[in-house]
Structure formats: structure tokens, C-alpha cells
Length: 412
Image (cartoon, rainbow, N blue to C red; front, side):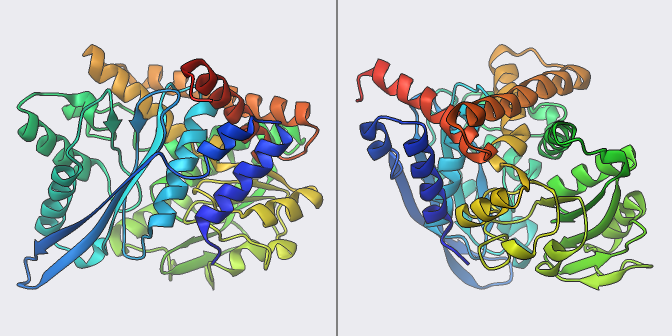
């Protein structure tokens, strides 16, 4: 698998060249502003002892305080966290969120930890961060974490500071100051941008076929929304494998099956398909919603879909993007398509700071307006730069904002 940070920087530099961004700005963005690394010793409930490597990357804060993302994954690397911090920097810019990009994570396998082990680990992570609050750095959830982990984070932060501060942590349960609509926000945003892109290329989503790699929080929410429109979802995968049915998969029944079994494999009436083979199936729409670099120069030529919408961070490499764009495949990049979660995190922080909380209809309406604006910004910037790549359009739009902010601050 290609190094995800090298892929991210390659995209950064290509967009910087095409957008004629100041070389001093580009030099600053080659690496994060700040990296925290620490090791967390922990006595586990089964009597064993482990030391967990952990990170927090502050990439760029030219437009506002650092925000978002805590990933717990057994193969987590610093380069992965750095790339995610860069993605968040661009994502916030494109979505017109006044925030800097950050990401954190712990190298651990959540599946091998008890609930008590997870709680101790998450609380220790917050203590090691020495958090400074909602105007400096606001962690949120990512792969391996969720509302419960964020509730532990918030409680630990408040125990440390002695202050109730719901805006200090994102992706919390609504009862603790989280936003309604947060759990499905990323999947909903993918659906909204997918629908917009399909309309632009004359594709009728209702009469289209789709494959979804990754049936977690994002993929499941997106699949449900697609199914409700009448789109025929012919294949779905998760970490254990995948299922295929050319007649279309019953998504509500699959959701019930996953709740019972914990996986999509062996769903009745389907054939097995691998995470690699799913991209070669005949379909109209492909949604990679799992991990990075799954569509690369080695398999890009075999991709059959006309529209790719990135539910995951960095699932299509820079080289694959060029190959697919040359083939006429439209790609809605991660920094636009999956920015729904970051957008609702922005809403969540605003609600926490004001102590005024919004109903679901308001959250979804504001999300729709903001994410469709982000899609339009990417499209317009791509057209202005003379490229068919929405990815480069999105990055150029973001880099121009960062460039302006850095100049005003006197950094360059």
C-alpha cells in the first residue's frame, strides 16, 4: 500500500503548482506545524500489560483552532495521522469552516480490548494531550471511536479542568452537548454530493447501480439513503469480506443482519466478493468508505464505475486519480464528499459555546447547504484552473484561502 502522507503531499503540491500558490505557503504546508507523540502504559483487564503508541498532529491553524479526529487502529502510523491532519486542513477550508486541521490516534486493536480497557485508554489519551479547550484544539471521533469514547474524553477533560465545557470535545452524545444528526452526518454528506455529481453528468441515481466498500457508520448511512432513492446496491464489503447480488441487496435487512452477526459476509441470497474485486464489478457508482489508498495505479484501469464518491479519507491515490480522470470517471474527493462529519462537528461546537441546541431538521438543512456549496466551490475552482479533477479544484480553492490567511497574519 502506498504511503498515504506521500500521496497527500503529492496532491498538495500538484494543486499548489496548478493554483500558482506562493512557494513560501507551500513550504510551510509540507509538514505539520506540531506533532505530539507519547506512549500510554496500561494494565489490561485480562491481567496483561501493554504500552500503546499515540499521536496528535496539529497541521495548520492559519484559519482557526485545531479540530477533529481520534482514530484507534492496530496498524496506525504517524504518516497516516499526518495525512489525515492535512486532509482536515483542506476539508475545513472547502466547507468554509473557520478551523485548522488536526488528527490524533492510538495504535491499538479495539477488538482485543474490553470496554473497561478502552475507557482507561481513551481517558489516558486525553490526559497525555494536556488539552487546552475549545479555542485551541478540539478532538473528535474517527475509526475505532464513537459517541461513547467522546463521552469519556469530555468527562476526563472536565475532571482535569474542573469546568463543564461541552465545546471542548466533538462527536459526543446529544445528552452531553452533542449535535443531533452527528452520527449519520458523514454518510448523509456523501449522499448529497453523490446526488449533485450524478445530476451534473446526467446520471439518474434512482436507476443506477452502486457498490459500497465499507459498511461502517459512513457506508451504512449512505447505503440506506441510496436504497431509499431506488438505487440498486449490488455489492457491499466490510473488514471481513463482502457480498454481491446483481439483483440488488436489501439494505434494511442487511442492517438487521449486521446488528446480529457483526459482519456482512454470508448474508443470505448473496455471493462472496472481496474488498479488492468490488472495484472491478460492472456498476455506475463506486463509494470507497473504508480506508486509504484502495484504488491505486495497480487497479485503476480495471475500475468500471462512471462516478466515484470518496466516503473514506484518501481512498484514491494521486496517480489513480489521474488515470481515472483521463478515462472520464468523475471523482468527488474526500475533502468535499465526506466533510459532512466535520461540518456537523462545527455546528456542535457552535451549539456548545452558545448553549443553544438545534433540532434535526435545522442541522440537516444547514449541512445540505454547506456541503453543496463545497461541491460547487470545487467545481468552479477546477473549471477556473482548466482541470477536470474535482480533487485538484477543491485543494486549489482551499490553498487560496490558506495563502490569503497566512499573508494577512504576516507568516509569508
